[in-house]
Length: 390
Image (cartoon, rainbow, N blue to C red; front, side, top):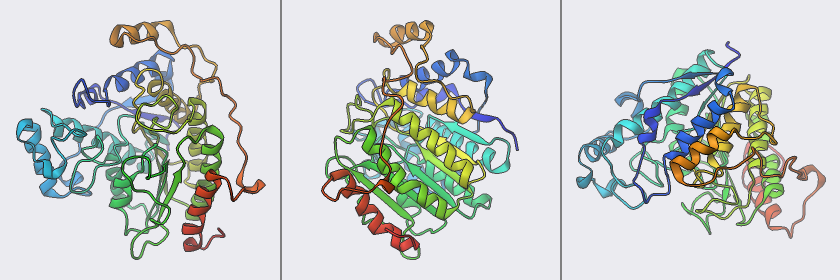
């Protein structure tokens, strides 16, 4: 197995563009790629491309009629069939939508193939993580569900157990739906509580379908949860479940929209805590999955201040050369940011909260604390189903 990590990249992914008024600005992808280069990380990873996902690959998850609807909307955006979630406010149709969505999916599938075959130990596609797309419809800025397709490809290649950990602020509903009745896939999502955020799913009682009871795990966090609570919840749930499940491969989704500056949600997590979870996922992959780790991007709408730094940290962690939080960001990158966006770019790779402090679950819990209530609800719903103590 190669000890190097792969960064999946094709400049054409920046064509995933819903228009100038849409919050999912593709400049976040370009700025991330440029920051990776500016910090010299290209020397530590193999930057590779992949073919767009073809019909047979897309149909591992998506219905044939939906794929045809995406193709039709891609060719004639004005005639998009809204019954498939296309041409809506969240998912406006645009020319070339099928092609670029299939490319992003192909990059995530390619990442999964490389890791499974031992061509890379870790692989990152920060353009991916489009976790809301359903088998038969677009949703939440997502056309094709590249995370689900990567998992489905791993199963097709022979993986017997795949764990998926999603730390986007929004529930990973599309991935959960794709594998709701498949005990080979453990889906774990930490997200803002569905009472206060799209897609209004991801309750702790959602634990998997018939024959896969306990294979879906949801930690619904109170709005306002910050670094200490977020890390406490992650470590109170995820490591124990991964240790029990022993996946062949770990697939993780790292939406940056948990950040306190994100305009579309209500958690209060720092860049430093996001980096800490990236490191934790890396370590879990090595401890329980033979090091096999596929890491994806996701949401994130503070497109200058947060997303490029968060995902650059992710690439660095995967490459085995973590960037120190106090690292000064090269002036050339900040000039590029201003030229592209007329915004001032951040000066350092930290929000000034490193090292992040949190209290482990084994120290006890407070039944009156809202964060601890959320963790307890998840443990009580899922852990007994898996033969674990709640």
